[in-house]
Length: 256
Image (tube, rainbow, N blue to C red; front, side, top):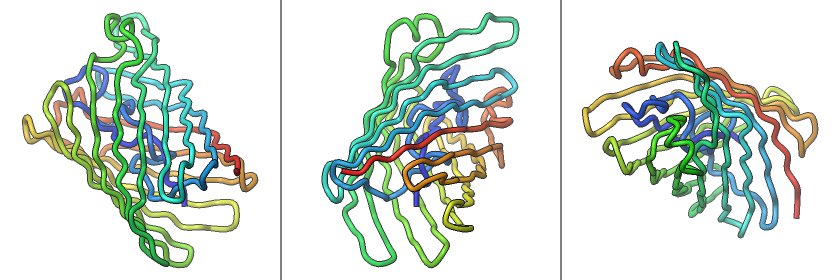
């Protein structure tokens, strides 16, 4: 199962470009938000080329292109690097485009049996250059996310959960969490659904969204990933609440 792409749509409330559910700070679970417990074979490579967009009342934001690359290091450890470009559209302002937040993450699967897997997947996100923060494309902020992942598989069904503590260099810390399910329709297509959220310690604000997606495999090595998301409930300021978002990606695997 591959429930992969942006991890924390950890939103950094009151970070102007990054209200929760908007553009990802951490990319890790395409086409959904929470990560999965799967690990690539040692020497195996996964490359995702993607576009991700979202809208609130105050802003439209896009990540394109996003390059998400993962490498299997051992039977239970893989490393990932994400490099995005970001575009911001605000009413009455010219569009701004520059590098977004880069991320490095390591996933360690520390338990596995026939039906259950557990993993720890720390991720660190930083601005990729000074110009993007000076021009206001992104905020000058660093985030360390510490998620614990669990996954179950039974027949054609899969369930994934994630709970994480996120440490921010600004705007306070918080928790992000989610649960996702997948149903294998046939050999090529998997239907996906997710509820994900975050609670920010600085103001006890909570934001919860949902996401629906499809993973379609043209071949075993080449997949199309598509999802759409919107708000369930939120006590963030109205201009920071997600109205809608979307994700489209092409995923390619190589084997050692």
